[in-house]
Amino acid sequence: MPKMSTRPSSVPAPLAAALAADPARPLLTYYDDATGERAELSAEELTEWVARTANLLVHGCGLGIGARAAVLLPPHWQTAAVLLGTWSAGVAVSFHGAATAGLPRLGPGVEEPFDVTYAALGRIDDWLDHVPEAEHRFVLGFAPDAAPLTEPPTGYRDYLAEVRRHDADPRPYVPLRADDAASVDGTSYAEWGRLAWALATETFDLRPGDRVLVDAAAHEHPAKWLLAPLAAGATVVLCANLDPGTIERRSRAERVTRVL
Image 1 (cartoon, rainbow, N blue to C red):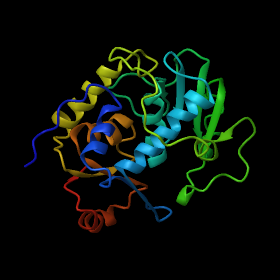
Image 2 (image 1 turned 180 degrees about the vertical axis):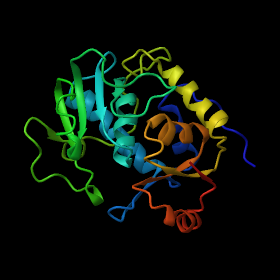
Image 3 (image 1 turned 120 degrees about the vertical axis):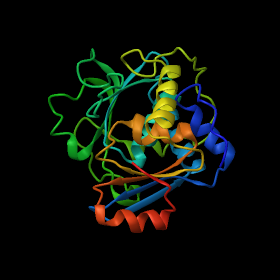
Image 4 (image 1 turned 120 degrees about the horizontal axis):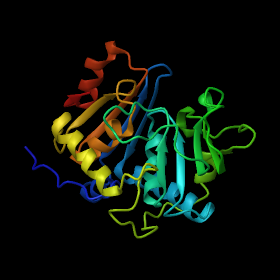
């Protein structure tokens, strides 16, 4: 059995470790059983999306350490790019809508305004009374094959169209410190790293090399479906609208070792 990974020192660190270990290895595979969509990103591909997102914020929006982002997105591979890219830029996150029991508070109630918001197209109306004020507003349509929107809602820019304008070079953007705030409640990068590690090792008992099938509806908080597997050195098969009848067949096809 592979040796357990070293506890990550910050939120972005496990992605860098995955890239160094095997750039071509499938790191995040996404299924939507309602639409039939399947998307797969290697460590290198996810790193490129993360880099583009960070460059969008740093160079496109002029943001960095001290800025705040509200994320109103469901579990999705594009959400992984948004979160990891936002953290890589040094921007603190408030993740609205996720179940937060036993985890740092990331939901509504934090002080507005924000510097940037990301909203899912299908949830904008539902969140109309809760979308924080922000100078920069991006919308994600989550169309299969990452197709851009034909007409973004008024007041929003299409995340996919904007992020593709920026470089995919995964260079450091800002000198992140372990005690910098990674979320708007003040939880630091180091604290998020420790939380992800505890979930991976104590709650889920994940191991390096695990292939983890995650029911998105049951594990909506990104600490569970994204950060914990990455911290453990595992890879993710994230399933939205999961059809229980597909689990056995999908587990064989994806060589899944753990089901959450």
